[in-house]
Each structure stands twice: as structure tokens, then as C-alpha cells.
Image (tube, rainbow, N blue to C red; front, side, top):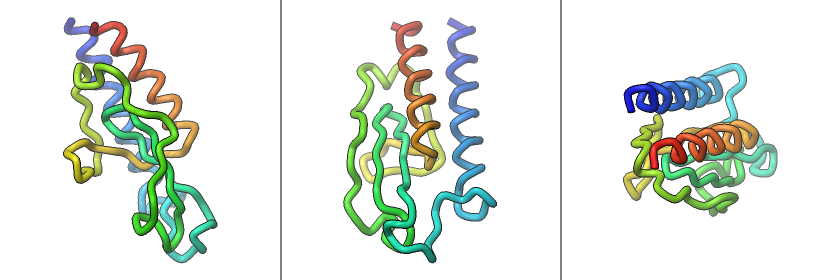
Length: 115
């Protein structure tokens, strides 16, 4: 069980690092408030495994958020904590679509090991 705990911690660290590399002030920042709302799409990976997307630019966090993939069954077993807090108490990271899918798949693999 100790090995799986280190794998979970490592994944959590990787997700936070990826988020930090894309957040507001980074050179590859995904949030571009001066762009038109259709200028880019922002993806969130939640600690539940849910992936959502919404318009970026000046509309970010002011319009609807759409679910791309829903929660992963037994996500609680991982206990992941990401940098941003959602209204429902879950946490999320701002990532590219590709990163969201990659990390979600890793979450699924870890859940298989835990359960």
C-alpha cells in the first residue's frame, strides 16, 4: 500500500506542476483575459476525474461550463487535491485537453490498483 501512496502523491504533484505551468502568469498561460471568448477553450480536470471545458478569454468563468467526461467511480480512494477549489468542495486544475485526458487515465489506473 505504501507504493501506491507514493504513486498517488507523484500523480498529484505532476498535475499541480502542469497546472502551474499554464496558469495566469506563465508564458504558456491558458487564461488570456484580453482575447475574445472564442479565442481559446479552458479545460478543468477535477479531483473527481471529471473533465470540463468552457470559453476562455474575457468570458472565462462567466459562462457555462460543459462536461466532457464525468466523475470516475471510486475517485475518493485517491484523495487528490488540486490547486483551485470548486463550489462543491472538489478541487481542479487548469490544463490542456490532452493533459486532462492523460491524467484522468492515470487516475483510473491508480483506482484499479487501490480497489
